[in-house]
Image (tube, rainbow, N blue to C red; front, side, top):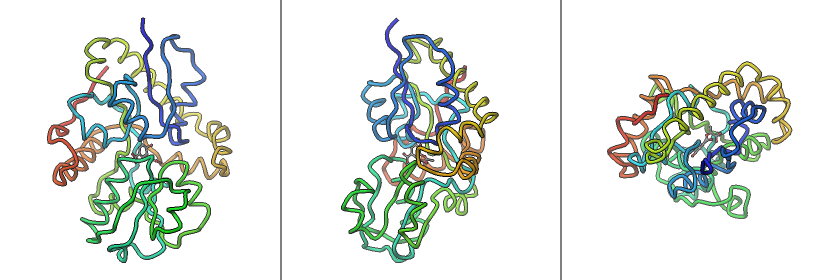
Length: 275
Ligand SMILES: C=C(O[C@@H]1C=C(C(=O)O)C=C[C@H]1O)C(=O)O
């Protein structure tokens, strides 16, 4: 059997699933690739991965190439704690100002544009790059995600901090789905039993991770570094399911993207794979 290539976001937000996964034995041909979301998106699109966690934006752009594995996501219902627009001025004053967007993201890049332009009616000048690089000093605001956002958040370098999921929730009354677990359509057709097996394993790990969250936080908190208790509060708030409200939230996000010509009209309704 050929190698099965599985993408995993290399932030601590996947730890409840992935730290559990690492403790279990799997078929030798299952191979996990750890990378930032934008790299996983590109690899899944190219066929260098067969399935894995990717920005929900990636599904929105190429829905016909994928199926979303049911009841898996990286989401928040209210504030997420690791997707922030850090700003030197009030977000309402960002018109025509430089905003640096993390090159590791795709969903949050689109989300911040929706929030600023459609909810706050400000139109900044955007650049994509390294939020820890030289460009950051010249930008009025910075979009950071994942572990980088957790680190920047602790530094207090920016007086204004906008939690993107919280603002989305205030305006739409919906949760926000940052990432989905997507499998390539042709891989699902050719190897449905492998997709099912990996899907069931992810669902199992999700359940176990929730149960053992405290010990998982002890393992991953030093990677930021942050206090394990703070890590616990953070990871408790991240949600990994994809129930009815989250599906509605995802379709609402895709509808914004469709209206902005950023996503395919075929991204709605969602094409979901059930095991
Ligand atoms: C919640 C988060 O969501 C992440 C944001 C993503 C994006 O903006 O494309 C992709 C995957 C998620 O891991 C986070 O980064 O902390």
